[in-house]
Image (tube, rainbow, N blue to C red; front, side, top):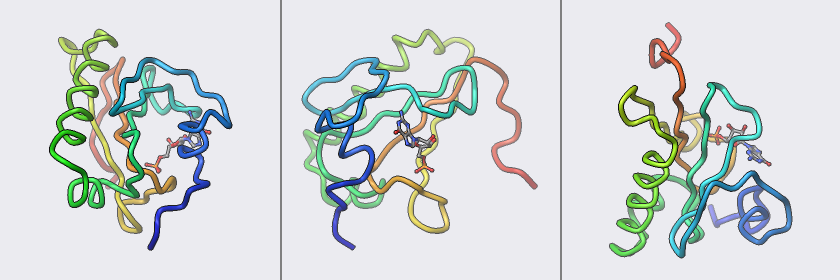
Length: 119
Ligand code: 5GP
């Protein structure tokens, strides 16, 4: 499956639709999820065109991978959730329930999140 140039996060990266941006650099963009599932719900996406976690881990360069994850750590730091804890989620593909086909990591926090999955 090729990368969909018009997925919603591609449009955010191109500036075609707005987002509540937290920060970015050449490797990543962090912004608030439009339908937050927790008091803190932030999405971190790479600037490069990768469909999913699997695609990113397979195809991104070492610089892109370290730039992305260092960016993610910086965002966690800026959200002030390090001490209380938080959850990272990346839904991948059909079984993962991924809706937007541009790799993203959800950062969730701000309260006790409970069990990871519904029974
Ligand atoms: P997924 O199910 O693919 O892991 O998560 C996609 C996430 O993107 C969802 O949590 C959804 O609320 C969020 N989302 C979808 N469209 C937009 C949008 O236009 N702006 C923002 N900020 N988030 C979006």
